[in-house]
Image (cartoon, rainbow, N blue to C red; front, side, top):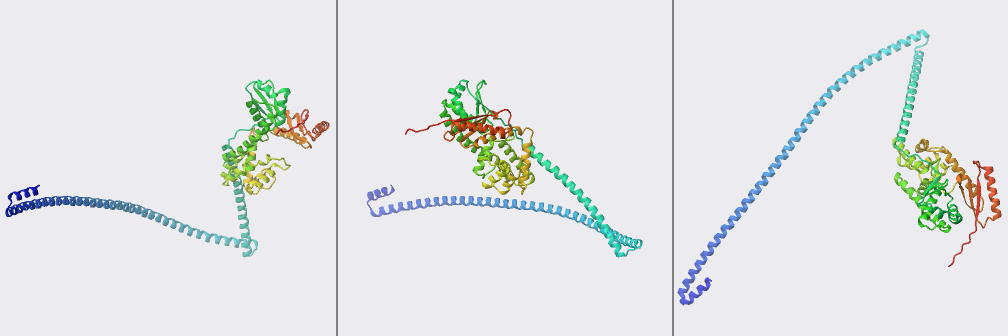
Length: 511
């Protein structure tokens, strides 16, 4: 704006000199203004720099003071630690001085006792020499002979005293060992509380109404006959309301019949063909359940790496009994007892528990060989890769082979503990089951017999034969022969009815 004003003034004035003078005046004023502005700006910058310098100075001063305080704190802490260590060291020095004084006192006492013993030793030696001389004078022996005689007498006396001490120590050790063994056994029994096992030969199948009984029996009894023939279980339909009795000594057969009946009643279609189909399907399901029971048992007991076949056999124990005691409950109890005793004795707990579970595995084979169950179980364990300690414990738990490991007597003792509990076993049931199995085995030994079932508590033997191998005439002869063998070879109460069933089946498929 000023330049425009200057230009106008120059134009108005029109004179060169005047214009020049005016221009110089204006330029001088502008220069002074710029100088003033520069000075003001310089002052402002100077003040800012001074403020920044003061702030930085104060900040450095604070940091320095903080650093000094930190060093003072560390120095004080070190000083406190040094004072504490000095105090502890002075206490230890005092204790050491006291112990040193006590040691010197004990050493002085010992030196005094040693001197006294030396004096006594010299006196004893003089007395012994005097005794030897007196003995030699009295007995007419030489000094050497008297010494030997005295030494022999002392030896005999020392030997007698030693034998007395040894006998006392041995008797005390035996007493303590017996007490300790009883204590371990009692502790093991107390720590394992298992319910008593009772074996039944009858199962009850509950139904919604008595109308179902007629459908289960079927026209002219064909359904119930088909079901009995397929399962080998006697089905008792009587006046008991809303219940059907399943009678059989074999728990597996009873369970098979119960599950099959449940499916048939739920489905509603009950006829012979359907019964055979359901029984076959239920048998497969029961086999799967047996395998699952074995796996669950191993998991519950913490046993790993068991061969699948041994696991399946463990599951089959659920449906077997030993003198009326459920075999799976018995084996689980023995396994837990073995683990407790092994822990008390410092042995391998896992091996002991494994041997306890498998000790009766020979009672549930697929076949029924003539070997004792302990030997059979040992061979099965060897076959499926179990360790020698476990195999020996299984085979030796009835003293049929020599025990070679410490686990073997533990398994034997725990088996006896489990079986000796009040109410655990009933030998009558075992003898009864054995008699029924022998009945079935006798019938199955004949060619052409497809299946045989002992029913009605062993009062009836029902035999199914193959129609293409056994004729009607031969069926009569076979029934008579079996009844005669039962009469001459077996012991049984009352009488046994032998029922032989022969039926012809013709099966074809329309494709």
